[in-house]
Amino acid sequence: MEETRVVQGAWELSTFHFNIEARGINLMLEGFKEKKLKGIRCHQCGMVYLPGPFYCRKCHVKIDEPVEISDHGTVRTYTVQYADIRGNPMPEPRVSAMVQFDGCDSWVMGVVKCDPKDIHVGMRVKVKWKDQPIGNMQDMEAFVPE
Ligand SMILES: [Zn+2]
Image 1 (cartoon, helix red, strand yellow):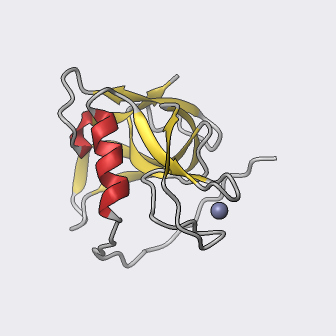
Image 2 (spheres, rainbow, N blue to C red):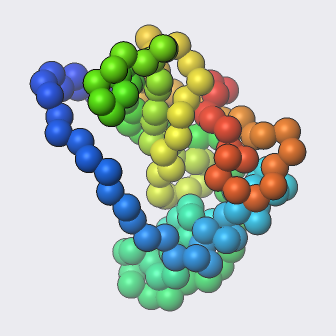
């Protein structure tokens, strides 16, 4: 059973940064040029990651098996933003979600183009690709309902 929880209150948020192994991100961005998602599969346990790391987070072995992943997936969690980082109201609410693509074990975050009242855990979405992708993060414009 899926459950949605609403957490009331003020959250102190700040910026952060994280590192992604270059090989996995380069493979993913190369795939974007063809409107494809390319990740890495672990040869030992079968876990599929996007973008692909150089080692399996579960088995701790080096992995390098490229695999094509569907650009359709399922919303696993989401948030609706009504104010910017300074607390100013947004012109319109922005829906962001963590999406698990079909056949992939990791999740990817992105904006969902939908009415905020329609978003829910378990919602089926697909990638809206830029018409002329060039191999950067903006090629994946947003998620849209299937
Ligand atoms: Zn593994």
